[in-house]
Image 1 (spheres, rainbow, N blue to C red):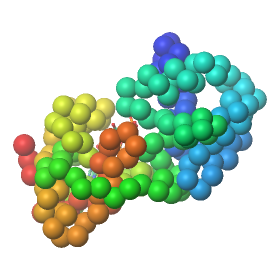
Image 2: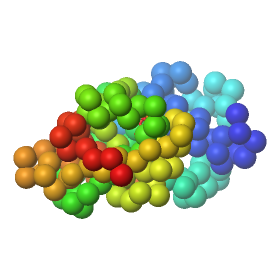
Image 3: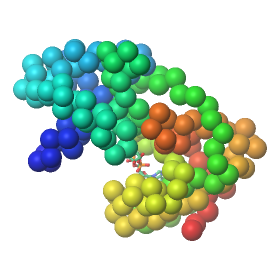
Length: 181
Ligand code: HQG
């Protein structure tokens, strides 16, 4: 666990709100929301107390805006990255002509042969800029960045979504839309 309480709490919240709410006895609604008071109570009951002020700092300061409060501030959810079934009611959006996907160089051969697959997540995650894609790829090893021909995918009727925190999402990317940089 990280010593920085903001980073440690962000990791804890990612685990609970994207993957395992049941691990602290929490239930999310169909759209991924949890009551803030209920979340804090469940965390405390499972030996992971988080002060309300720290939660506010995590949501406000998070480098990727991973979490969002509901407009009235009573609920919280992760903006993307779930492996559990939630309907985030994502809005379809018109992507820039080219998007980028950061991966590890050791995955390139497989990706170029079979396309980008969502794996455990709901969507393939794409970035609007090369720097962000490089950072995403570096999480898995020596980074490599692929260009995605989003304009051609749109022409072919493929749908894109933009998460609340600026990540471009789509169901999959076939090899014909991928280019090496
Ligand atoms: C790879 C982080 C072989 C894919 C980031 C990736 C992002 C294939 C890995 C978000 C493949 C999945 C998501 C194929 C895909 N053959 N490898 N056919 N298709 N892959 O972590 O995109 O910090 O599930 O290239 O910033 O790395 O969690 O996805 O390397 O937004 O908020 O399979 O996670 O955000 O890895 O990252 P992941 P990702 P957070």
